[in-house]
Length: 157
Image (cartoon, rainbow, N blue to C red; front, side):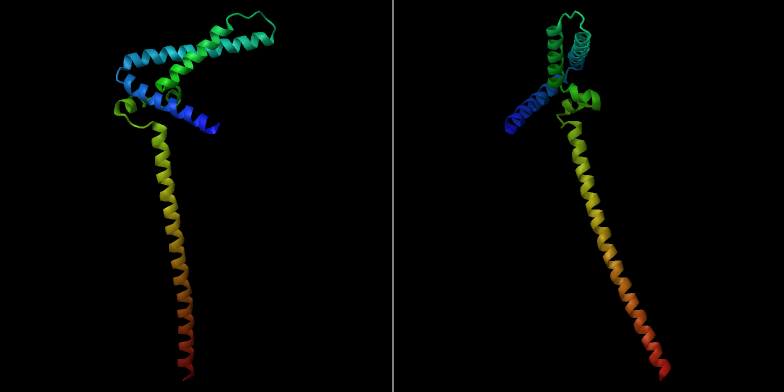
């Protein structure tokens, strides 16, 4: 079941990348489709919410299926064009589509992983430096002890 879900997600992720790369070359068309999809999505959300609220109040309801279809169409168009997530993240979707770049969140994840690796490296360096300092400190203690013993020997002679 998990493989099926991952396969479906992978397919639609690939489809979204292809559509976004093609349609981002035509920003006005992209904006029109995106605007239409957003309006359809929110119209559906609004009216299904009204439907559920009115049903709860036991008032007459009309047009539920029309509203549900609006949600499905709007969501589908937003997902296929890559706007569903990008509208809440950044406006870089058009630029990344034109450049055929990876999605912005993939870049952020990669950057975070690099920074995490750097931090781990710095922590390791700090631990190694701390061990060296402790070793030098122990040697200084031993040298002071040796110097004190030598002073005592010289004093006794």
